[in-house]
Image (cartoon, rainbow, N blue to C red; front, side, top):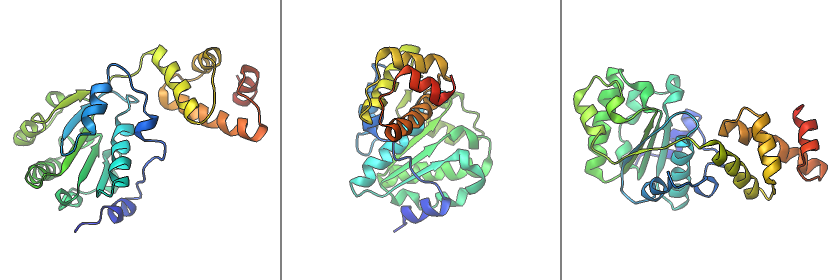
Length: 230
């Protein structure tokens, strides 16, 4: 049987320890997707713009399935230079295959052919295939028409970026997961002074968390100003 762990290690691609379902901020717009993605043997396609949470969800699913003893693999096509179409051979023998940023190999004949074959073999084997991209299946610029048709045959979910108010709430949510209580005013201050993207907000939180632990102080606006140079 194919060893997904050895493939993942060979690629030098690891999962983010924080990318788990319990750390994902659930909203009215994404709660149906959260429910659907956890269903067994349910292949699906997720699309959305950068920082909408696609990578987090795919890695969270891998974390969950792996902890349940399932064989999983996560392939991010942003690591394109490390990958070859041949590496998809035999992956249908795994329980879960997650393919991230699918748009990056659109228009590549060898990749499209290999993905088409994998899709068909996954359907036969009963494995689960979860794909993500920055556009809907209809909008992907695929040359292989059969592959384009197949990719539109699975349930499709759009993952929306968080609104401004939701990002502030998400920051407070992630802080609570670390045992940090951010008041609304402190969270709003961080949001207004930072880049405002959810990834950048988490990076700021990581830095502030370390400083708070070292100095044994609560996160206040004066401490944040000093730490971040704001």
